[in-house]
Image 1 (cartoon, rainbow, N blue to C red):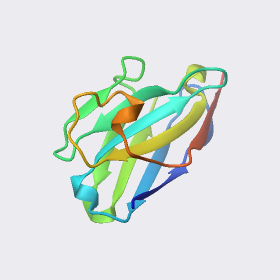
Image 2: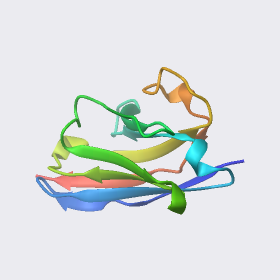
Image 3: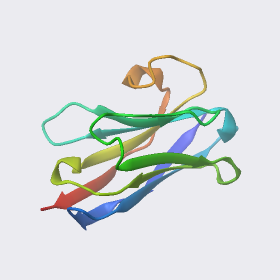
Image 4: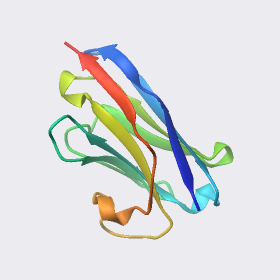
Length: 124
């Protein structure tokens, strides 16, 4: 079993920065591919970013150039650095993990494990 817990985030003004962390336990973290998703009120959950076990990264067009996903295998933690925040980035952010290599890194069903979510609120 794998447990994921997000931390960080919170409230920030537009143009500011926040960082989310996702701590993993239960299995060898270095073998996971990790993803970040978000869900705004009244909207479906959407892909934000992903990082493979080998370090390859992917981003949604809406966050490309502003957000950075990274990982520290020694600390069993994945990160999402969010810069130049916009009010439309307001959402609950979820980290997710998969032990398998799947092409569809941007789809929810790719991931077997999910954190409980962390609120990010960006004011204008």
